Image (cartoon, rainbow, N blue to C red; front, side, top):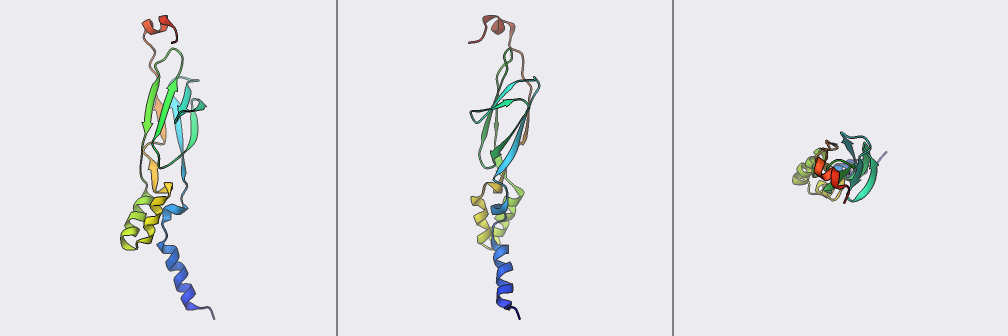
Length: 133
C-alpha cells in the first residue's frame, strides 16, 4: 500500500510553487517597416533588415531603432507589464506565500507590444541635398 502522506504532500507542494517559474523567459518581438530593407537595431544590437523577429527577455524595456537612407530615423521603446501568469502568482502569493517566488522569473511579465510597425517618413529635400552626415 502506498504511503498516503506522500500522496498528499506532493500535490500540495506542486500547487504552492509559482507558475511563472515554469514559463518562458523570452518572447518574440517582431519589427515591421513600411520601407523594405530598412535596418533594425534592438537594444543597440543590429538585428538585420525589416521584417525582424528577435527573441528578447520579457521583463526588460527594449529600444528599437530603424534606419534607411533617404528616410528619417525612427525610435521606439517597448515596455513590459505583468502577465496573466504573474497575476495568478500574485493572487496565489496572497493566499499561500510560496507562489510569490514566481516574480523572480521573467515569465511573470510580458511585453506591452510584441509586434511593432514603423512607418518611415522621407527626409525633407533640403536634408537629402546635403547628403549623409
